[in-house]
Length: 346
Ligand code: 13P
Figure 1 (tube, helix red, strand yellow):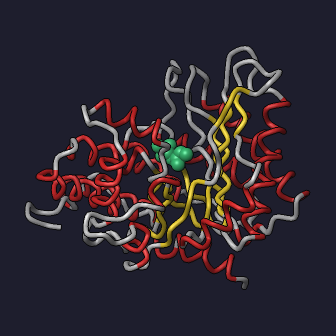
Figure 2 (cartoon, helix red, strand yellow; figure 1 turned 135 degrees about the vertical axis):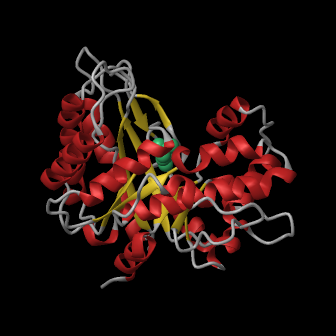
Figure 3 (tube, rainbow, N blue to C red; figure 1 turned 120 degrees about the vertical axis):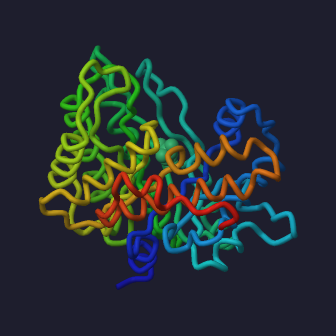
């Protein structure tokens, strides 16, 4: 087994998942603003330091995706933030893309940028301690036929070029093609588009000689749009998601680490649990790589105030514990009250 394969497996071992703490300054500013929290490099550091130093999270969180700003920051006591993770055996990763821009010639669609100079950036991130990287592409479903062939193929090509460069530099690529929940589409339409996306992505990964054993796939779950008149049940989401992955994600990929995509935090846990409980062939580890569904409650409690850090950490610990249980197919609604730690801990 190559060291890439070993890293990919270590991140998701024993029901662990990933904390995606890699929101760009612009995105986290939007989230902070909703809670009246000023967004500065210092406040972003304080929030992320609170998450990373939450006592007792290492059994639940195998990897953390960092932002370019965060990987260079130091804690209040002067230790590199990345070291706070490695000291607990948590593997640090980095968002390697440069976000999305309008795709020329394809109105309403977006292309992920960041390939120029990527080799040198990955080399630097590796020296800073990152062992994996992430690149997110987005696909919009619309009633008038999006996504287009152009958008599917341009983004799949970029994902594969990024993944090949990561492996060349010794970093495990997380390949993240996200079919967005925005819109009123049905779960059936999401399944159709997710199938097309995964087909295009694995075709390009094959063409560009990406080693499947040394990567992680981070897809959306197959789910109805936010404004769909027909919300799918938890069982329907689990069945459609596993069916789509069985058809389009090769068994050589060691793990599938879902994004939460704007699902409520509890629903994201319920879906992951149902996916893992489903009686169907599942050759991959199926776990989480959530941002909002792990952090929202902690952020709302923290509100930028140091006196709220312990309570915010308890909320984050709780969500991480619930999602870890879901990754093992052992979550239950009762955990929502039982696993909340008593005041004073962690
Ligand atoms: P969400 O879980 O909030 O969808 O974020 C995951 C992620 O990493 C998006 O790129």
